[in-house]
Length: 326
Image (cartoon, rainbow, N blue to C red):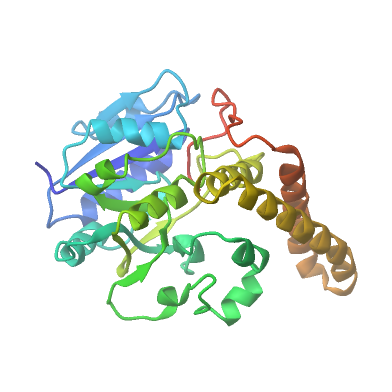
């Protein structure tokens, strides 16, 4: 049995995937690992290049786009490792991240999900690497400026990302871009919940793991670049994110909470969309583009919150909207 099974879901990301596999092979020396790639019916049709370059990779080619959760569960069923890690193709190891993660976590008997430091392409810290479980309050106050001033606020608690040192920190949510678990823990919580086609499945999994009594850990010294969004078509991504969040809130907090959450997000969207045009008039040219981006985001939030009513409404899984490089 290998120490680690590394599972990728690929959708039109073969170039990134090859670079990531190369970085794994170059940086992982102290553990035995296997690599499993589930291709979600990529239109490019070039995923066979991965098998040509890395004959030991197990390649599973789906005839349809299964989405992120179902495809990862398929990969898990073919895996053999003591630990499994679900890794986005658009990542790149820059140190022996998996060696470091396994060296740290083997001594934790109540170990749940494990994550590492994710960096943007410019080397800056990606604050989405760890999160708190979403609530109405922390979603209303989810403003980058506020989070950066108060990183240790319990509403979002991103302080471990900037604390330095090499001590693991207990956190609530690990990003699905790189998410490691013991195989028996993943099986115990019944794997990824398949009602999510794309997005929020990492929130859901971490919530199930925490509810089962395990501790989710962030390992700061394990580092990789996460380019983000490279296997997702950008058109419609925000819509999918917010729809998945509604599924999550209804599933774990009930339909009444979801309704209050929806109304809170509608109010926040209307408030911010009202302020943004005023802010654009006073801000410099360099900041106007970010203001327009924020305006588009909150318009999408408003549309989603006022049109997506059924918890079980399915995202069209036949569309090639990706699964995924977030």
